[in-house]
Amino acid sequence: MIELTDSAVTAVRSAIAGAGQEVEGLRIMVEAGGCAGLKYSMGLVNEADPNDHIFENDGVKVYVEEGSLVYLDGTKIDFVIGLEGSGFTFDNPQAKSSCSCGKSFG
Image (cartoon, rainbow, N blue to C red; front, side, top):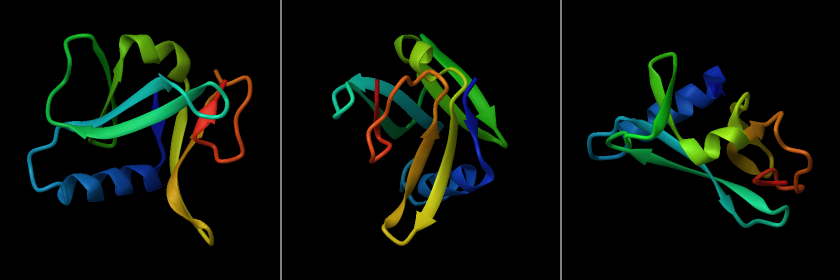
């Protein structure tokens, strides 16, 4: 399961509203890269892939491909605003290590 906080739901809804095209939801993936070996990737999508796992948080659909689910299961995603900028953060119980920027894990 993937969970979005209220702040993350609000941020995704805002991104969907400003997309200028029809959007079904948010895709979250894990890709090779980053300073810790794996990195998070996110983007708006207008349709599901047949192999996607779909989670819904307060009306916002989150699409996760089969290969990424093993790395993301149980992750809680938040959207924070701070002095150094704003962005999504990941509280991932599958991560054994992470880099200081919070966008990469191992």
